[in-house]
Length: 380
Figure (cartoon, rainbow, N blue to C red):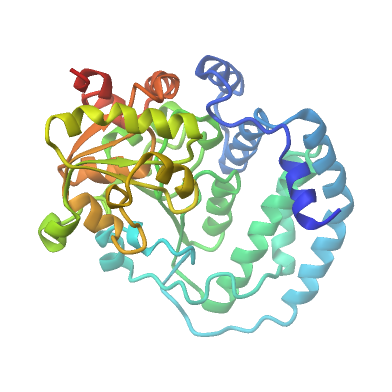
């Protein structure tokens, strides 16, 4: 069995946010009560995430972690003996290739550096008391302790090498997020988060706490507070990639009145999308379809659409694409949010993706609350 087969096996049975009704998520989430501190926040978020994971897998991971934890601790303590102080850095930001989602305010205020992110992993002996707190909180869940510790070893190493005053990540989805906030506070370090993708009502994102969490809209503050995230942490700030300066990207050669932004889609869904956009062509409007670079089967799209109607994502950047349209059309993709926040008109597809559209309304999808027109109303 090779690595990919093992990975596939371990992913089997997991449910995603669309598989579990919001009512069931909410019922379990409410049963957990209010978090007592940041470690408890991390533990409760871990339990919420396990709600989507089969019990056999939770048990397997905990069994494996039981055996690994002692070796991991000793290994990183030994590594910690050889860590030496390096160049001090005021603010360290996660190296994740996401500079475009960092708000200008963060760049200007903190001037964060990602060049030393996760350059090593180690523990010092003073970290053991913190690890013991994790064990005390979740004695019956060694996987929780192991995974949280693996995040601590990364932070411990960076902090001892570079003495930062601020640590910034893109990690509210991780149950270790609040734990790392508690860990940073031991050294008087500010811990921050930056929103980098669309959010729905999903209890896997519940309970988290940072000193500052930058979000795109007041809508997300209400959503996260409903999910019992610490209520005072939020700052609304749009990065330039979401609030596009349209005038910088005008290109008549790539203009279309309607652009449909595809994600993962079956052949029948692609055919449905193409058929649903015929109304625009009948009205003499120009239509283009933009495949997702990873999830859309371009060969299936070519069965139903002429090549000149397919927007080449390799040649046309997403900022240029959005800047040169009147209507952005699609179901559930961050591109639609980019178009909306940049002042473009957005149409939600309730034709081909009717079931998803209905679910998204119940899951507090931001564009469902912004009075965006729906595709079925455009059919005439």
